[in-house]
Length: 148
Ligand code: FES
Image (tube, rainbow, N blue to C red):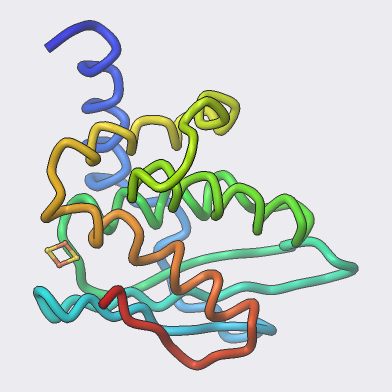
């Protein structure tokens, strides 16, 4: 494992051990469930939008280390961002994880770049995208989504 991979591994382990924004939000304006049918895990994402910005974002649910770390990284990164920025970042992350897009922009996402190692494990990609799909569903006003 090279230095960068070790750093990414530490970021993911840290977010799994101490997930940020891991709570239900009572006064959210949007929320949606993300369901991974491969394992049955669910992550619920809560968002509070104020003046076109994500004033608060949190998640709860059951998931593996990758899904929890990804949700924690997502909520840490998106708090305070505009909706446009959030959609852009979600698009970059999902493209990066599914291999459907360029990965060049990933470095600008800071710690979220740690998720790119997941690409080497195709069975875990849906774990990492789960909360991002739930975020997109919530912003579209949908109640839930599935990674299938
Ligand atoms: Fe269920 Fe990862 S194993 S979300």
